[in-house]
Image 1 (tube, rainbow, N blue to C red):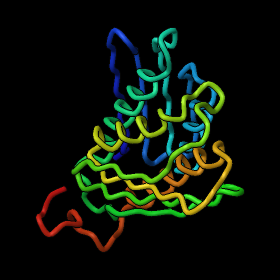
Image 2 (image 1 turned 60 degrees about the vertical axis):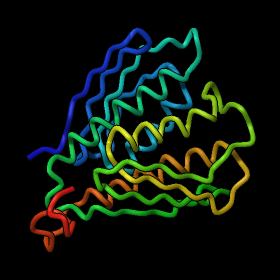
Image 3 (image 1 turned 180 degrees about the horizontal axis):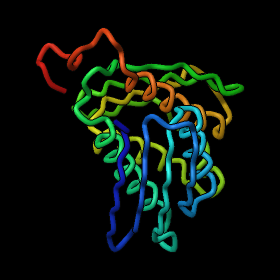
Length: 195
C-alpha cells in the first residue's frame, strides 16, 4: 500500500495543498511564494526520497509567518497520515549532516507525542526572502501536527544558508530512516503496543 496523503487547508491567511508520499523518488513540485523556503523543501524532498507537491497561497503582503508556519502544520498532518498505523517501522532515526562549514544533527522519534528541541539560532534576520526565525516555527509546527519528537543540534557552523540547509536535509534523512520498514518488527516498536 502506498504511504501517501493529500491535505488541504484554507484559512483567511493561507490556502495550502500538499500531496506527500513517504515512499517516493525525490520528486518535487513546490511553490510557496518564498524562494529560499521552496529551495529548502526541495532539498528535504530529494534527500529523503519523498515525493512532495506543495502549493501555498499565503498573505505575503503581511510577512512570511503564516505561509511558513501553516505549511509546517499541513506537511506535518500529511506525514502523520502517510505513516498510517506505523506497524513495522523503525520509529527512531537520526542523521548528522555536513554542509560545507556546518554540521547539524537531527534525531526523530515517530512516537505520536510531539516535542521540539533545538539549540540552533541564526546570526542574520533573513536568508533570501525567508525570515530566519521562521525556520523554528516551521519545524515546531511539523513536530506538533505530525506528533513526533524532533531534535536539532548544531555542532558547528558559520554560514546561515548552510546551517538552514543542513537542518532540512538532516531532517529528511532522519525521517526517512525512522519511517523505514524493518522485517524484524511485526507490530509497532513500543512496549505499550501502540504509537
